[in-house]
Image 1 (spheres, rainbow, N blue to C red):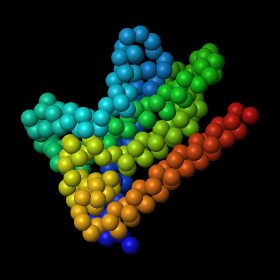
Image 2: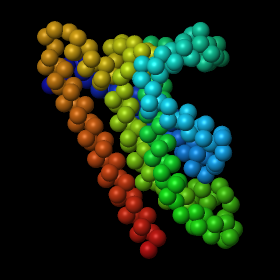
Image 3: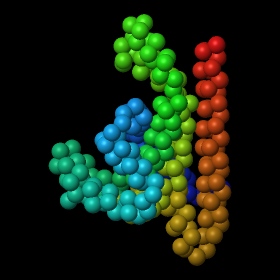
Image 4: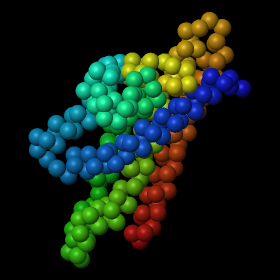
Length: 231
């Protein structure tokens, strides 16, 4: 059985992952479309910026977020002065950290959908009088839905596993920023908590397998539905 601290960490991890992915979906789709459809310097630079979190050490990401979102930072001061919102040492900061590190996975998956989309279908829709907005929402997005679902699921799984950026940015506060990986880290540092550490390791592995399995199942089902509609 999980103890109250472990249960709290598990709930907080799920909540933060949902928030992080939710705020990433729309920007992720827009940026993936832009990178896929546009060429030139701006697209190349944006593409590099998006994928930087994949290669940067998470601690570096966390420190940069700390500089930006601290109460004296550019963004942190703006949020505090304008909306009276502070993300320091709070779940909001943890959600921001999770969103940043998982964003490349979301964009990468969605971009693959745009890259493989048959744009002859889009051209045919234009010929039949469809507007660009109608075509995007009624034709393109439904066709690349498997890629969107996969990106969301992988990003969610990455959020659950986030550690380095979170602990650097918002510390390790039980009930506020202590997610599952941080609770596991705490358990490994305290003598006599080996059982707790093992439980958290098992839960982390199970969640990882479930996330990947869901991504595969949903993508295959959506693909079958789309192919069935085409036929």
